[in-house]
Image (cartoon, rainbow, N blue to C red; front, side):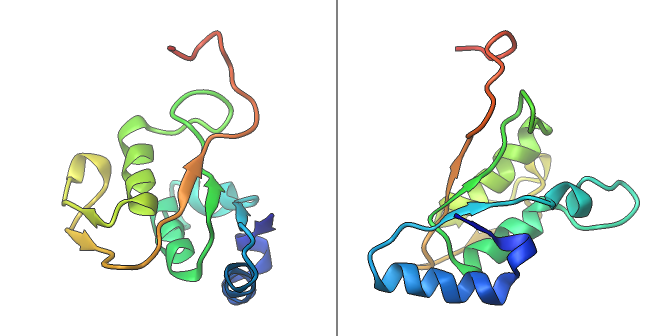
Length: 124
């Protein structure tokens, strides 16, 4: 497991290449993201951080959910989840996707919801 925000993108890219060369999965953590992406007046959206992660490398990441501890806006969360895993993303402003994006052969990152699940508010 590597925290790509505190470890840095260069370290993450190096670790990603090492893991890929040695048959290891690289689980990505995003500690400290709220300092960067949850600020209304400054910072950057997690969508930008998700694209940087996809270019840097990783196999799966704590993505959060639309309910629970790491909750976010449903459409925006689904928008960056698609950016992580899909090869081609259509423009959809309701989800924060402002232009069509073709990732061609760049590997995706699997979003995982790990940690605390609040069953009282989750619909199964």
